[in-house]
Image (tube, rainbow, N blue to C red):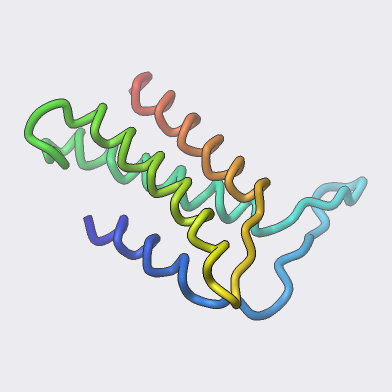
Length: 113
């Protein structure tokens, strides 16, 4: 639960510096680094849940997986939408899509493993 709260708190912290792009591969196409970071954070949340489940820990007593999905989707959406209200942060639809793609990918991994 601490990891989920950490993501929530970090969504309020101003980011300074340039996360605009990085060069990847021999052809050096550009991808925004923060999109990759969003993906990795939400995939990590899903993997954290998977590891806990494999070790016998449940986040909730009943319907743990369904409740986890609702929780992580809420977190993925809320942490982006709340940035509309924070002066030093900016809502970005692509960040939201990166979050949701990572959640979807994580859910698929959880179901397969």
